[in-house]
Image (cartoon, one colour):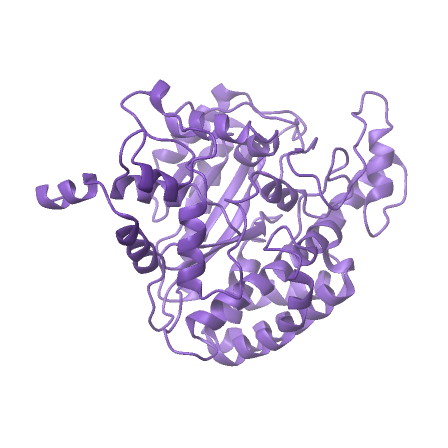
Length: 461
């Protein structure tokens, strides 16, 4: 980086400059051209999946994967989860093919170690896996989240997702315009949570939920994990949220100095200049510590989908989401299908409103979400040929639609049936009888009754 540019990033910034930067760097408008995905995976023992994988074996897995020549960016999450992030691809098929080739390579590298990748929204093997990353960022993040309860640790150490990245869209109105895509992302997001729910919990505050992972994300922080108000324009709403979110840490020269006064928002930090004036680098870092279900990073990053089962289950949410956003006809159909759900968001922003809670708790057992999913999958299926999707992608989406969407089911239902078979009980639609049965088994931890609001409480998985 040129010396003058580096100096500019280290210069203290004003409140007006920050608002302009947030509006400019987080939403880059133009014709939708690129598709990307970020896939998080839990690392499991191939022989006995019930056994947690110790940190030494995780380190060996990470090293084996890091030695590969991959097209995707490989990173490690705090609990040892592996993440593959694709480069922006010019088509859906290009995105899927690139990730698939890298996954084949990573799986082959892990196999001799007796390890494998598994797609599951929350790790059920232990309530709180150890944190294997000791970097200052994660030390500070954990200290911050510990103020409000254990949900932050569960998010960092035990969660895994499929994140879909799409262009922000045109500045102008229309099915592919930024304003429409922003609203669509937050309403369709609940449908995606419901249709792809795959983190059933059998005990704790999320017992019986289809997506306990979504419950965890809603509980990590009252402000930094929620969406801006949808009635606000995207740029203005996001800038306001970013400035009014608490500072997770003020970075210092050593780990012990990565701390922040409790309750200090970025706006207050700029205005007071204490404990030191913030810089452009501090703003960039602050934006990476915000975790709403839809995060603008120049493009739109949809973060609400649980990791999916099977070798290629992940490609279905990527394909469906891309089709519903980037095909104009499908985007219009999807918007009509979900706009009626907006009435259920009146009580607050996603994911803490009634619509998103219903999606996480009940999945497609919620009638309105099931109806919306059926319409959206039908539209996506019609759009995929127009987007040049490969036969493999189209077949995978059709198979998921037949197995789950048309039957009002989601992948979590399969898991609850497995748990019921183990416990010798029937698996009802909401999973609660399975949760009660497993909670009552010898040596099992008793579950906390599920409620609509449980801020600050984390899961026993």
